[in-house]
View 1 (cartoon, rainbow, N blue to C red):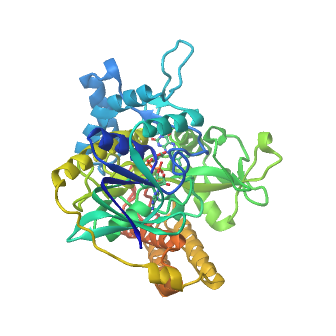
View 2 (cartoon, protein in one colour):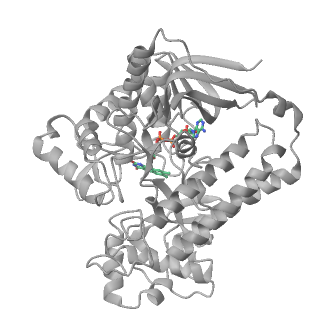
View 3 (cartoon, protein in one colour):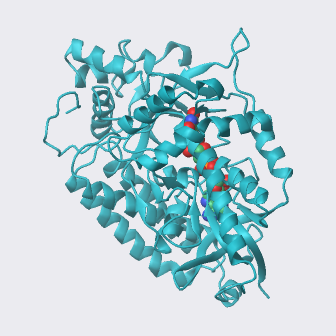
Length: 514
Ligand SMILES: Cc1cc2nc3c(=O)[nH]c(=O)nc-3n(C[C@H](O)[C@H](O)[C@H](O)COP(=O)(O)OP(=O)(O)OC[C@H]3O[C@@H](n4cnc5c(N)ncnc54)[C@H](O)[C@@H]3O)c2cc1C
């Protein structure tokens, strides 16, 4: 007998967005079930061990003057290069302060200066010091865990594999618990808070899988996704499994990035001294790559050199015992599930929040606004999902049955199947890095699309050799769907814009890298 759970609001994902949504739904008297793929406050970008904290943009208290709110709004719109939803940006700006004040009241500690005031930092792509900073991962974990514990949220540890649909309405989801058993969760409202998809690239900064589960589940359910071509990449260093951001402030020193014979890559690929120094100066203003200004030439030079030399190294006296490889890490997605002001997707009953959703930023994103979005739209999704559930109360639960137990019992995992799955996964990740990373072109993206399609066919052939409760199968399926969405959108956008750079866009725009 398969386990089944009925609830008002189902939240898939337990990062900052999922937890914020859970509180809001509980406050609106909904019964809430949260599915967490990892232990709560581990896994996902919110609790990343790489940065051990984050910045969050917002205007609080007396700062919330009409002029400052307008500046903040204008800043996000300008950085988004026409790709953000102005209504959602307006909401993000207006509600940023109250959501940060909520976090402070929950016990989150933002950094303070010697004068006792909060330190405020410039986020990437912005000139205004608006971001609050956290740097104590233990405090972040403790805060989110303790607020979650204050509310009667039932947590199921497992992975959502499919949304349940009936007549085009989302009715909940299928979950594979970590024990390998299926649970059918019937919900009046379902919120995707599954984070981003940077894990579809071989080199990525995400934690855990990050294969874009939410994008894939939403896509399969027929929801609209937007801006999937805008993926943030940042230069980084990797060594024996450790990953860190590249200190861009040191790039103007000679011989920092070298090939295997010690050749200075930046000097070679950017021979004009004046231009190189100007680009390197611009490069320090934001961590993610963008072709919006001359800073992008640095990343393009590094990516082209990597294409030729395969491996590049970082030389640094402070790290002389290590040989760090220079790579571009996929860092975060600016695109995702299209939502409205209530956090609803285009599928009734399905909501999205945090990095799974898009709208409040565009081709580029001011550093710190992603965390703001987790709080602003997490709260909204939770609140409106609960209100929808209330409206539907008294109506019978509409659940479509599905019995997978035969396949669970019947099939045993075969080593060949495991190897085949791993090979598909690594082929897609390689192709994404090669053709849908920093350097994109019609020819390369078409190649990538073909590889992804071949991998999808291979996966389909494996379906009946894999037990239905084998979670990895669904992860690889999600990876393929997300990779396909990024590739398709990148092919469609022929012009370079922000984080999306097309090598074959021959239009030279003043102030834009070519
Ligand atoms: C190193 C690093 C530094 C960053 N720094 C900043 C910063 O300073 N400021 C900023 O604004 N942004 C920053 N970002 C981006 C920001 O951290 C993320 O966008 C944000 O944390 C996303 O929160 P989220 O709740 O949407 O998703 P996450 O925190 O990623 O959580 C997603 C959750 O969903 C779960 N999940 C996924 N798939 C499934 C499934 N199928 N079933 C069940 N559960 C699932 C995961 O286990 C996880 O619990 C950074 C990102 C990284 C990687």
